Length: 222
Image 1 (cartoon, rainbow, N blue to C red):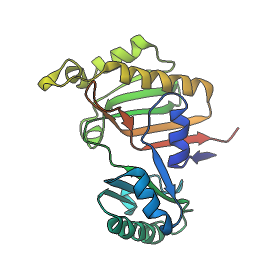
Image 2 (cartoon, helix red, strand yellow):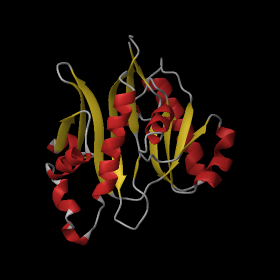
Image 3 (cartoon, rainbow, N blue to C red):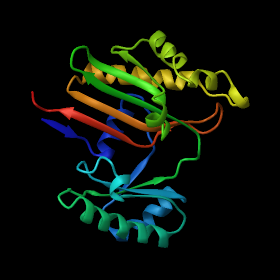
């Protein structure tokens, strides 16, 4: 039977395999907001933490670019109200608060299991473009460094990594994530699906690239 990890569990699992994820603070009580705001720093993003609500935006359970404690308090109330209205059976573990990541190049990493061939890793353009353009490359696992570099070249991102518009991104950051996913699946065959979208890449010698949101589905039938 499949079980979806909550966002914190997914982030911790991916981080353990060298896949950088945005630092998240869990807030279980409205009274924690002032301390959390001081810890995280503005602007912040807030999301419901619930394995029963994997798609938070559609249920009104995400608020972005909050710039004050008053906005955070309002968002906290709105998120819980929307969760109760749109997903009344969902188990709510709290609210995740993250520092808002700066704009960057959004890519997607994922894994799904093909009924015939087994686990397949996916890489390509992320954000809204993954649905609009289907600009992704796929490989059967395990993935080697050569495979990872070939995957980059098979997407429109190849030109980006060649220095389009004067911007420079590091291929090795993408390679490291793909190899991390390959190792993760090799050691955890019970994983059925992974979706990291968006993963934000930043130019070389700037801030560290990281995943912002992730879904991990485990098969617990065995």
